[in-house]
Image (cartoon, rainbow, N blue to C red; front, side, top):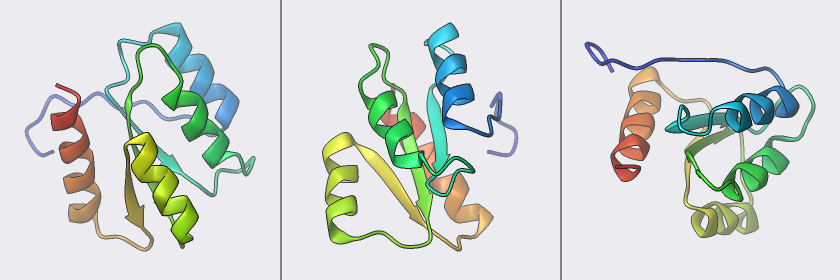
Amino acid sequence: MQGSDWKVRSANSTESTLTFVRSDPTWSEVVFVDLSLRDNRGLDLIRNLSNQAMKPRIVAAAGSATSDLREEFVRLGVEFLPKPFRFDEFETAIEKSARHSD
């Protein structure tokens, strides 16, 4: 990501993320979702984003994930990043997802 032209925008809830993505669906190439969002609706957000017309690539972070959750991530095309993770692992997951959106 160093030297890249990434533009980053943050949101702290499911609703604020959906509002942003819906307001300009072409802007969000990759969305990073922490499943432990303050409103505890990270998985709902992922499902909702996956149903958008201009579906962004999604990277999801969680401290643990059941096999059912991992299967759902695969079905939805979500890149899973287990916590804790190092920055280089985060960077790799984002770049991998961005390449798949081309």
